[in-house]
Length: 177
Image 1 (cartoon, rainbow, N blue to C red):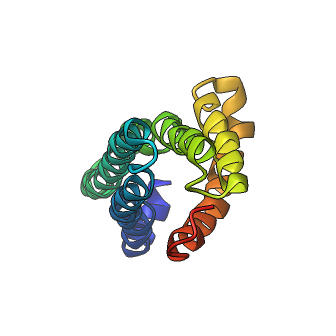
Image 2 (tube, one colour):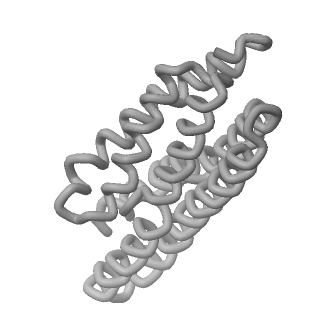
């Protein structure tokens, strides 16, 4: 992996900036938009969703910073000691995954709170809320190693659908259900 990173460092930086940093920034905006949508009908759940949305955005941002800073250090060490660089890569990558991708607890809790609030208030489409429950449970289950490989893709791919759907729901001003 270190040799691939050395050959494609710019591409990997752009990739990390996209999947982590840009994603974290957009997650923060989305968390606020959903908080505003839900707070009139369920202020407590809306506040909790904002907290977990901000927490998840912070973790994702931290993972991106770790990925980019870690990769730069790995490449610096690689010039003198490729074996040490490979070991260092594993350390940085483990921290990166712990912050933003090895398990999906923060994102799972965030979407679960939103799903519960959506079902309780009808301020989000019912189908979107049910999908959120599936995604949230899948995210929490990624903390169980035996389930992580199976349910991690359910979480990730489900969230892609969920993000598009919630975007459409938020753009439909005046239509809460």
